Image (cartoon, rainbow, N blue to C red; front, side, top):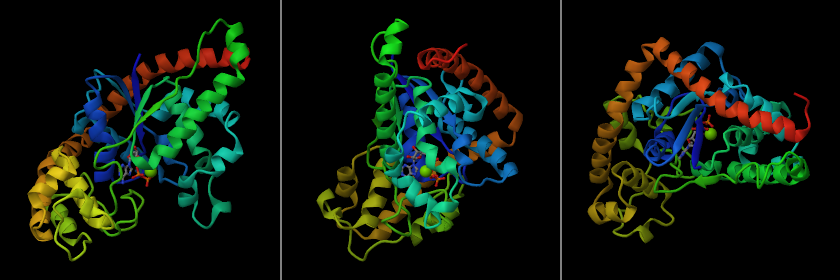
Length: 340
Ligand code: ATP
Ligand code: MG
């Protein structure tokens, strides 16, 4: 059985990178897979979150999922902390993963910064919890942005080590084959890594202090227009072929955003705008962005004005997720040798 799992952290303003790298693709996968889409609130608290803000942001991410077109009646939309299996399996994985593996994780290094001694233990163990999120549902496919590639590889290593370490125990329990699948990353397309509008070498992020660096899903049309107009570019006109974008990260980023929003290739975008001035291209990009994101932002605002409705969706999703999670955890506890 083919199952998709992915998550988004309720850590602040959702942006175009989250939409193109993740949420837009979640929507597209609904027709071909059983999907679980999770608001990963336990990941969020690996860095300090104000409790009242966190509640708001959990509802906002849920609203974004639904406004973008995820159907919570056909698929499962829930928040992580309501299903205790995530924490339970993460603990087991803390004991499977090796320190040396986690020491290589670049996200930890970036997020901990220079003051590493003062980073939370949770931030360090983050990838183990992420492996638990996926493997708790024995998900086979995980749509994520390019920045999560390394964590996905770690999840595959954890699955394999668990299957190996406990192979004899599984055989004794009559469990045949690999208990945990090797989850496949689904990364790709022209917007797998959307870059900051201010700096073509940094990814667009919720945690970037500059609001001009990103387009938020809830930005109004005027704000989107002004951010795109101010976006950093170089003085050359756009090239006519994708080759010509090499070494021009800001230009490549904007062309990639246009391509992903229009659902065409970068080549196609350049065939239309190549040779022309940036200002012409930027004006078209503003129109396309507003046309695509405007309705989603509007629907998000409408949905968050009814928090009880959102909470009901999350409760229902959690109940359905728990059925799958509990079954996995029963097996895991038997396999590890815990008495039930
Ligand atoms: P934070 O700064 O708090 O880590 P974030 O913007 O990285 O926030 P996450 O909640 O960590 O957002 O990631 C949610 C999903 O969005 C993940 O699949 C991630 O790979 C994807 N994503 C995040 N930033 C980008 C980006 N700039 N381009 C494409 N995908 C992205
Ligand atoms: Mg992130």
